[in-house]
Amino acid sequence: MLVNSSMLYLTWSVIEDTSSSELLSLTDTALIRLLLKQIARKMLLSGEEVCELYGYIGSRTTLIRDIADSRLVSKTYPI
Image (cartoon, rainbow, N blue to C red; front, side):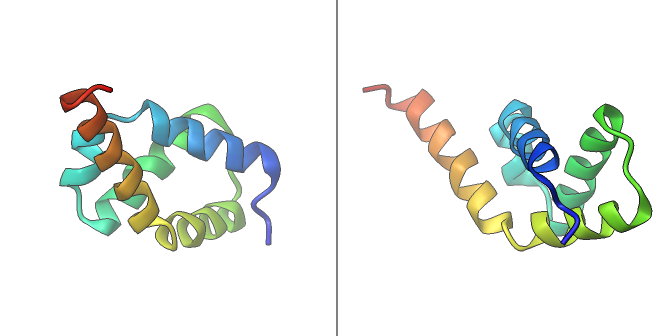
């Protein structure tokens, strides 16, 4: 697996910086492509790394959407 700790950190940072509504409105493929594009703007990726990140993000789309949904709910109903 080529996804190292700096790529993981950057991936989740990009997810956190992306608006919840955008994350929730995209298809899985569009979501993965958007995140990969944003990551590639910040870090030079090899073809193998792109493939690994595609698989990593693809396997976590449900988690990403759950996080995005909870951010929207917390903005709507602050504690």
